[in-house]
Amino acid sequence: MYVNINTDKTELTIIANILTETLPYVELKRMDTLENGLDLSFICKAKSLQQIEELNKKIRQVSPKTRLSIIDEPDLIV
Image 1 (cartoon, rainbow, N blue to C red):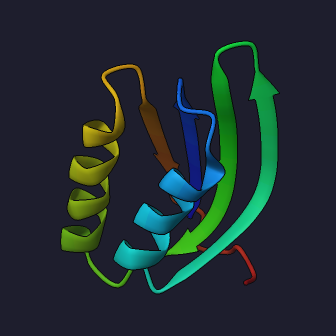
Image 2: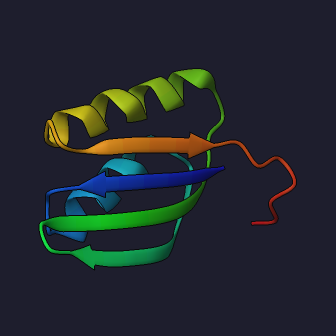
């Protein structure tokens, strides 16, 4: 699945640590530095909806301005 995160935080490790602690496979594909934060794109795998819900909860705790978008892409080769 594609995971896109837009945040006002400027430290990649904050977001990357949440992803790697929650999901079994995480690969950073794109990082854009914005005036006030980061726009990040990852390819990830989740084993269950519970992992996705946990990711959603943890990402929302990063900052009120952090946004998460997940796009299922079952034919994605990782």
